[in-house]
Image (tube, rainbow, N blue to C red; front, side, top):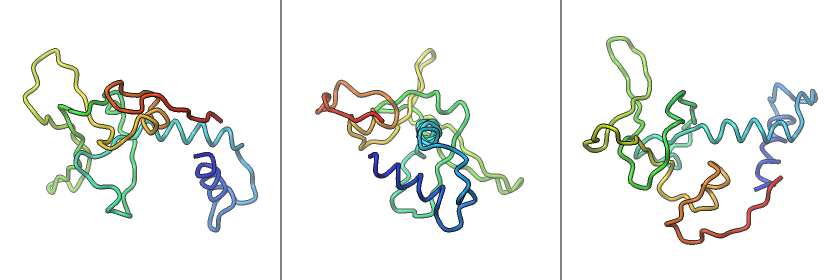
Length: 138
């Protein structure tokens, strides 16, 4: 993963059209901190295939990022557009009847391995295979 993050850093700081080209406004360590902070705060849209949409952009949704992961979520994040106000936003919708005092959970992605969950979100699921792995820390 180090080479992937390093390539993102190089494109951001030296790529054609980069507003930071030749300026060196932040270090690679600062970039990693910012990248990890943003990456672990994004949530996927419920039942949305991001790989099929090359124009998809991740967004940070305040408070929604406090929802915990579950392989069987009871809520989902979905886009919504109001025609009368011409405004778009995200909604949290229930996927089933939810009793009171029940924790709301979303799926961070149905196909994440424990390694991917650890790298992106900082946890693993004991029920998944390959619960033990070595991950490099930079």
